Length: 103
Image (cartoon, rainbow, N blue to C red):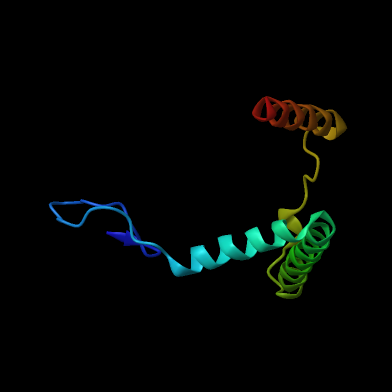
């Protein structure tokens, strides 16, 4: 079977071997390479633009969810069931988990 144009070679007696290439993936890799090759300043601008785009999309999704009328107040009532101590414990857990993946 092929997923997004990528074939893992011989599967279920298929005589086809090797990999097929996805043109969209090649284009994305080429564009990212060109951005990186142009220099640090341009890469920084590109990253800033992508961050703004990502935050805009996230904001749109949040606003669309708030405007949909599907949020009910009774689903939001224990906001902090374990209080601020639970928030601190969770923050510590996430911090050390991230630190562990970084090592």
